[in-house]
Length: 217
Length: 200
Image (cartoon, each protein chain N blue to C red):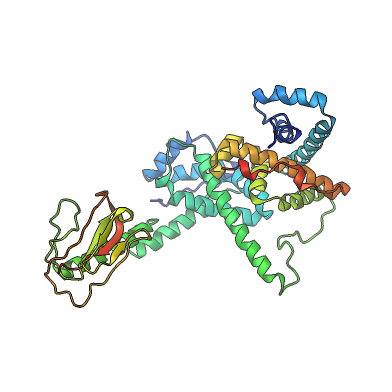
């Protein structure tokens, strides 16, 4: 149960997360009915969660909405969470899966509207074309990432853009670490190949890379 | 088949090495290969360049949290709203299984009570005496391993999931059947039911 608190944390943005104890202890407190304990977990993980989801959806408000939904689902499923495991990867698994589902649904809608609507391009493009190099670079990287298969793109984002360890990524996507390392290698090889193709016009030779299908679980 | 020391295999390892993800035991072999293979060295340079691009993007978007507004008030409000809705409906919040379970239990109760059966067997709580009506519905333990046939030779094959079979109209209630059950497990799986034809 969440109890209404008269003194909500007004300066939540100023409060540093992580001072309220270990995640396992906080989860236990939430299960005993301490809503503030869940607030500590939210504040501990929200920024990184939003940033990670931003890598997938490229829209701040959307990432924030997805992060909110992630926390709601985590709260609802807290009784299923094994305290012996780490809360962070479990939370991010919910968030990443939710986001990937959202993107798949949106992609299907885009495809459906492709033949009836000429504006089938990214619906989340900024209103103004920003000439800054950083934004151009990020957009270019985004385009290359979009060309990767989802399983490689996910691993590459989590490892090289968000600096999760391979063991954390394995927990997030629920695969063996060896599988994650294989996917990571394949993702990096494909990324550099596509990047150079787009930048320098180098030809793509997808058959040069070894097949990864026989290495998957 | 790609050998362990082939360029294809080494290039996979090089992609890991570019991000310092290579395990130590592979590093020496990769170094020795690079000493002898110029194309692989070129490949390694390209992969490293790709990683540097990603690192630039990562560094450019880390940002700072000074202006970040916590979403906890919004999350809490939504949780409270759900809780209030659940309370208004008179059921516990966040328990989707409860109404489903209650509905299933109600259906079982109706069917059992309607036929006047009471569980007597110690094998399962729902097994009834043989003098049951033809529409007795009984749960079957581990339906995938049960095979039963009634006197009409209708094989109740459970491999595709639980099935309900109507009693033929010709069967009279209270008569004994000739069912041959060979339960392989006494474990009851909730929701798995099978109508047992009345005995002839």
